[in-house]
Length: 374
Image (cartoon, rainbow, N blue to C red; front, side, top):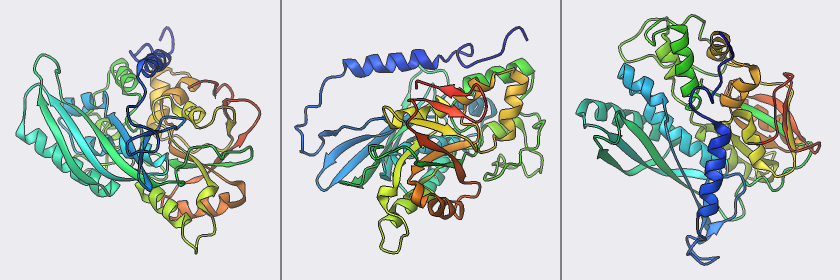
């Protein structure tokens, strides 16, 4: 290979995308809802979810889609996990502000309706609602020939949090401890690069995975009707994004009880590791830094992608979650207790690093993996 593959050469420039989003936000007008009234915006750094006023509570909203992972699902006609992907990308963002997700609406765009495909999507969304503990409150299906060439799926999640209980990162301090929760695989980011590597390698998604898919803290979903012990590359790369409502919602509720050994204030910030990888941590605070000294082990597919694609290590951690789907920053005093509580409910959870005041950047045990902007 003449030069290593990266996300930009696969068609997705994260820096350009960030600049475009910043331009969009700068052009938006202020809210028409007066401060202190229902619907008025609540200032929230980081942007994992939007908060608005609603009486004694704050409502939280997040919207997102599955992305180009759907192209693999369309190719294989396998829809069992994509509803879970769509749900996860939304409700996981709500968790980052301390909100409990309660409802979801979906949007499906197709070039032509297909009852069999829609039935499979419905079943997947129903399972996603069960995992996220939310109500599917409605949705929209649009037939758009000439605009879309294959199925697209997105959605919006609604959550709530009591006033005063939102997790904003404002109480973060140097010495706070980082706890990593394992991902279930690639999740729903970086698929333009995944597909490019697959094309370069000459593999088919129906091929058996050329690696052992076993990994601590996750299972891989077989396609319906496939009971073989061997997994295909399609099954590995379509493994649905993990939904973290269980255990995060339970953790936040437990912290408010009198029998808890830690308080809600001990949970300083929550990061959903999506597009941009570990650089997402920079969204949680404007000046503090983050060091990962004991990272969770990447799943085998990440190692395979890097080797086959000749992808540089920093690019891997900039594009993919590398085995860590969520990161909690918690007080040092109660870090061990919180980590143990979480690990009893999600095997593979561990302390992975700490917060420091030595510059606004993310550093890593692996030399060269460093990020100074999101």
